[in-house]
Image (cartoon, rainbow, N blue to C red; front, side, top):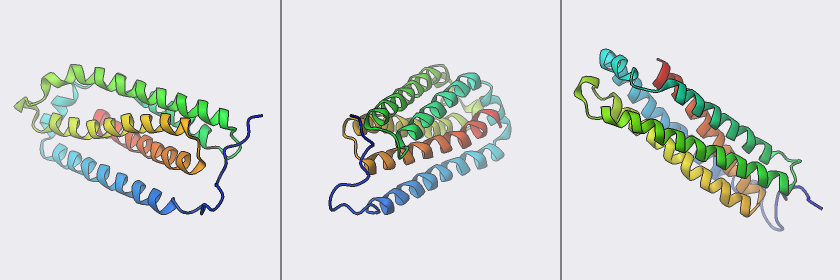
Length: 184
């Protein structure tokens, strides 16, 4: 019989990892917040170059990637449900990781069409900041997807809560980043 994922092991403090979790969440939000503010300030200073550079971005592909990441987040939320059985949680984590890896593949494909513009002075610092910001996010998604897979192999509630919470932070960051980078 498939039972729900255990919340704690004998002797474990259920709040032991909560402090670490919130340190990670706030550090991620701060790091991406700084990068997004830098991107916005540079966009104000170099408005014409940024407008010209955005024409070379593939907004429909980025919108598809948004759907991939949100679907992945939905699966992560299904895995973290308190009533999810081990099997249900494992499958949802694996599916979340696969959608995350699809996000990575689409982003790399998108980069292949944009990299030719990097370093072109006509676009100011747009592409340098674009690749820094989106690349930093891409690394987080790739690493997070691998951690989702690892957690699916070793099902512990505290690990699942940690990675699914961080996964939702990556979703939140992308939801803010997508309109600021692609649609502004």
